[in-house]
Structure formats: structure tokens, C-alpha cells
Image (cartoon, one colour):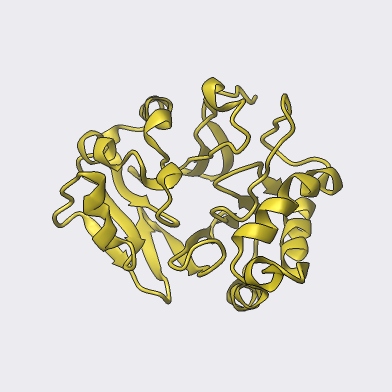
Length: 251
């Protein structure tokens, strides 16, 4: 049963789990809400886009309720925005065994957060990479200029869950929020302005589509907005691929 402040398992196969890490009550009136995710497998765990400073307490408490923080060995970032990476100084201390995965484009900017990361950063090359968590593999999927010039999504082939970063972001009317999309036609109205502005160009969509169109995807889990499952996951991808003009195309 979903409790909005608590973790919610989006998919599991034995001891392999993909977990949404709750929502802060204080975020509810801010328009664009942030999602964080935990992947657990064989006594090892990873975080995807753990968020900014103000959500850290909720994220840490919910992680701790499910796994020993020392078991977090990978923290994976989609891009460089503060709502993604802003809690890095806290993460370095509270997850002492974690390596931090980020596009090589952004590594040199990290010291401006006032942290010394030393040898704990792993650069992701433009073509992406496989990242082992426990006995499973997560795939860093190139999605460059689908919001950021050094941008990655993450794919869990075991559960067929695709973390889509900012793709899927929704700006809700006041008082509206839901974790799982039920009515796609209504929901896309909350997404369209964001995607028209924040994707660089139609060419970026075409290049990204070639990268993922052969993946088996049952769930799309974005960093903002709501989660798409089953038929709605397919509708979301087809809608995104169908956008004719975005970003520079509209300038």
C-alpha cells in the first residue's frame, strides 16, 4: 500500500528490488516534485538521482529503513542540476562506501559544490556503460541533449524499468499529485510545456529513440512527475517520440 512519505517498491524479482523513496510533504506545493530511487540486489545497493539538500533527510531515512547505508556502493546521476546533485556533500559522509557515477562532462564542476571527492567519482563516457549492482547490471543509457548535454538514463533489464531522468517531468495544478499515471491523456497536459522547452531539439529525440527503441520497457520512472506502467509507459514513449518541435526548433 502506498504511503506518500515512505518507500514504495515499483518492481522486484527475488532479492532484486527497484524502490521509489517517497515524497516530502514540504515539496507538495512546489510544482515540480523530485523522485529518488533505490536499487537493491544481493546485499549491495545503489541510488539514482538522490536529490538536493532539502530532501536529504527523507531520502536518507527511507534508505536506512530498507538497507544499511554502508551497503550503498553506487550513486548514479543523470545530469548536473542542483535538484539532482545538491546533497553530494552529505552523501559523501553518510554513504562512505559509495562511488559516484556522472558524465565526464560534469566532474570538473563538482568541486564548486565545496566538496573533495578524490577517487570516489566514476566518469561515464558519452556512449554509456554497464554498472554492476550485486549480481545484476544497470545500464547507463546515453540521452544527451534530452535536457542536458551530458545526460544519462538508467535501465534495469531484469525488471524492465527505465529511469528517464527529467523526461516525464510534470507540472501539476495545485493540490494534484499521484505516483502512478492512470489517465495518460490528462497527464500529458501537465508534461507538454516542460518537454517543449527543456529538450534541445528534435534531432536529440531522434538520436535517443535509436538508442532505446529495442529495449523491453514495462515501467518508466522519471526524476520528476509520475511513474508510467504497462500501456501508459508505451504511450509516454510514443508521445515523446512524436513531438515535432522542441527547444531550438521553436526559437
